Image (cartoon, rainbow, N blue to C red; front, top):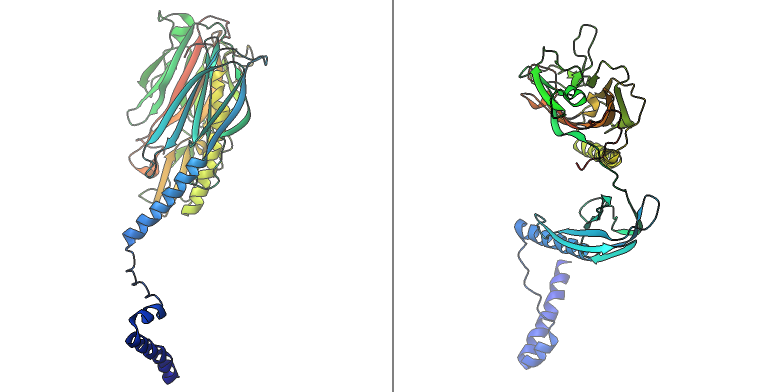
Length: 418
């Protein structure tokens, strides 16, 4: 077998030599083109650069092919077309290849009733409809272009219906914006929202205000809103533990089981109503068990983030509800369980506890004054990550408070320019 292989190689080689001797031109015509020199293997850096170039090239192609195609109509609450509406269109797209910056284009026009928008090469668009007689309405549409799984494309809207809400007379409103409703064991202090001055006029300017006092001191106001916890018959904070979560000492940290927002008033008709029977993360899937597997954690995070986004879209517009109910203020306190606030991940003794969630909008009645407020999870910090939000002498927690109160007794109108 070995001899046969050598002969098979030698025979054509000898023929090629004879051809070359007789006629160099004939040899050149007879011999197949020489094989190219074998290239040296590409380095890891060159391979990465080539892969990056191919990927960004494809992303650019995908982005260039995206098309914004929106047709719609602007009407009032009775379904009649609205004239002379200012429409601001903000187009946005990432700058490739590194996507560390975005490119924007802004277009402004005036529309009456029907409108149409067409543009290519952008993956994000925001529409703002405004008229001085109506409240601003904003829409946001987006599309992925090959950067992740299950990307949703909402850039095509064949029948967008924009309903503008008429601006009615505004009321004299006392308001708070992102004030901290706090309970601080580290500094042994807490803050409460004093409503007395606003409903009685005692403080002159008729404004609600935040007051900081020691933890063991009772608020001097007769009507106020405070942050507290669920407590047992001895006045101690009821706690909650999570399976498998331990701190650096190998002990299970305890968390306040329920956060309470309590309205104090000597009027039996005063109280609260939770808008839409719930709030942020109403269907929170977290069951208190930590997840060590990274893929399982990412999957749950995506599920939770979708719930967060859906609930946020549904509940945030509640701030645009301006007419408070006249009756039904039976709740004296509203609670948020700790499961809505904490997300626990990790393995072994390396657990990370994140403070998140907790969102509510409430109507309230206080001293025959009507208002609304929201609380949103702010922060809970301690000396170590695993004890974030845990009940110990280092606990520092607060919620952001947003509040609107009509200063005219009996008036349920909560419209303002805020």
